[in-house]
Structure formats: structure tokens, C-alpha cells
Length: 445
Image 1 (cartoon, rainbow, N blue to C red):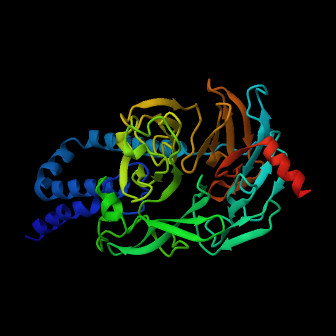
Image 2 (cartoon, one colour; image 1 turned 90 degrees about the horizontal axis):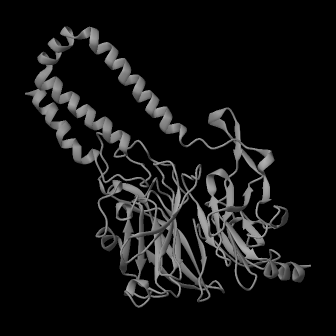
Image 3 (cartoon, helix red, strand yellow; image 1 turned 135 degrees about the vertical axis):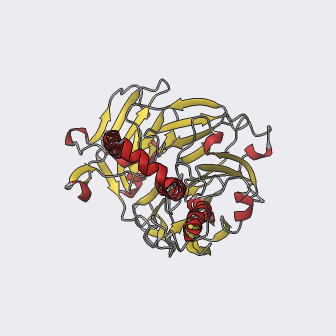
């Protein structure tokens, strides 16, 4: 009787082992893919031992000289797969010969100044200026500079071009400072909520005017039921389990949580476009939000904030995997930086939001960033692409030729790899018109 109860207990644990897992969820819980496989193998082993142990024993005894080599091959194969899987995420070594700006096709580039990590450089990679607040840095059309003090720090603000503060807010933001065409500033923050017995971060959007006056907010937690109606169950929808402890908690964040439900990572506002009369979702002013966990992109009504459109994981040809950045272009297509978080290569995909058809795809050999990533459509038709984890930026023309590239001159040491040096990350790089920046520099001097 005890054996029967023990076997049944494994069966009842299956719902707690399994949650909807797709590339991009983050894998913070026992329901991450590897743990789920271990749970299934354990269940099968328990069932076999309970009901077929004598048959298994006689089989093993009869074929013991064949079973051992097979087991060794299985172990060797699993080991090869594991290390080959890990090697797919190895970042290239730091290379001094590649640092700085490299103009490859001078007549094809969209010349200007480049801003990244609070540093302004020219096309040759020479540093022109830097600011003390250096994360999520961006410059508006009037020359004001906006940035967070550092990664996941408690303050962000607006500054004159010379660095003098206009206002600073004590709000821990992440991923985005978005300057709208309506003279507002939209940022992302998070709020900790107790959800299914865990401390969980839920994303919140704050909108301010450019004087720093708070205007409105939108919370994923307050709208959770509506958003969940568009997607399958995620890991954190499973209640905490005492028998199977969570094995992928992250450290407690500045928002006070160990888990992150959606992990919003990009925001944009729909501009004027050819699809604006096709469907209410595509009207200028509507919001586009990107969630890494679940690999989801949504369009929200600009007034009601109701979901009007969604593009989720396998709804997109080739599957989205933990994407960053989603925006609509003038043709009415949505461009997405698809990280390919687990397939091992990244792409920038353009889709028709009415048909979900892939219109175009940009990918290169060795183009991969496991997280982060950014692109900017330039005025001459080129595209500036940030391969964040490699500390690598490259500009391509309309024929997908690389015409300019830049490697971060700063490096970091990988402690887990005997202090091997790699190029430091670049979260985003943004190109600015040369005359615009020259005017600001002249006024400052």
C-alpha cells in the first residue's frame, strides 16, 4: 500500500512540475525545462520500479554486458550535449585591434554622433563627451539629456546638455526612457506583489510631462486578468510547492522581489503609418509593449489601455524567443529584435501585424545576444544594430552590407572563466544628426 501511495504522489506532482515553458520565460522556478525533464524521468523511474521491478531485474541480469556500454554512451552523449549547449553562449575574447569605430564604406554610412552608456562618440570612436548619469541615456530634440544614474539604481533625471540637473526623481526604473512625440516621458518601474505565495515583480509604466509632473500610470498587475486571457499559463501561475523547492530564484531586487512575472523590456508608441485605417490597433498613439517572459508583444489602446493586438511566441514564424524592442514603421509593419534566446542566434524580424506574415528578416553569422539588444532605423535607410552582450555595434545598408562597426573599448573579466577578458556590454547605441550635436557642443563651449 505504501508503494502505491508513493507512486501516486509522483503523479499528483506533475501539475506542480509543469508550467508553460517557452524560450524567454527566464527559468526562475522548478518548472524550468531541465527540472521538468528530471521530474518526468523520476516519475517514470518510480513507476517502472513499482510495477516492473522483477522484469527489469531479470532483463538487466541477462543483458548486463550490453547495458553498461549503452549507459556509458548515454552519459557521454548527455555530457556532450550539455557542454555543446553551454558553448553556444560563449562570448568572444576582448580584442584590442577591433576597438573603436571602423568606417567600412564611407559613402554608405549615415554620419553623425553616437550615444551609448552615457558616452558620446564620433564615427571614428573618439569620445566627445560623457555624463555621470549614464544608463538608458537619450537626448531629446531640444538638447536635453535623460538617463538613469546606473543599472537598477534608485534615481533617473533630466539634465541640460552640460549635465546640470533640471529634475531628478527617486524612482528605480529599468530598460526604457521613452520620449514621446507628445512631449511626455515614459519610463518602466516595478512593484512587488505577493502572487501565489511568492514575492513577484510586476511592471508599471509611469508617464511624466517634460517638466517632471506625473501624468498617468499603467500596471501589469492591475490588468493581469485581461493580459492573461491572451496567453497560456506561465511559470509563476503555479503555486509555490513545499515538496519541490524553487531552484531558480534570483537575488532579491531593488523592488523587493525574487521573481519577475512578465519582465517588460521595451516600449514604443505607434507613429503615423499606412495601416492606421485598417484596424483600431494600428492607430497612431497606441502603445506597444514587449514582455521577455512568454515572448510576448502587445498593442494597447492609447486611451483605455485595453489590449488590441498580440504577437506571442509561436504566433510569429520561426518563434520569438525572449525578444527586446518592438516598434511599428511607416509601412505599418512591426519590427522586432528577436534574441533567439535558446536557439543561439538573433534576428531582426519585420512582420505584417494583420496577417502575422514575416515580411523581412535580418540575420548574420555570429550575430547573437542572449539578452538585451537594440536597433535604430536611420534617415538614409540604414539600420544601426546593437549586439549588446558582445559590446558590438554595426550599421548596415539596405542591401545588408555592414558599412560601420564599433566595439566597446572597455572590457570586463569573467571570474568563472579564469578572468578571461571580453568586451563590456553596450545596452543601446543611438545615432544623432551631426549638425544637431555640433550645435549643442558649440553652445556648451
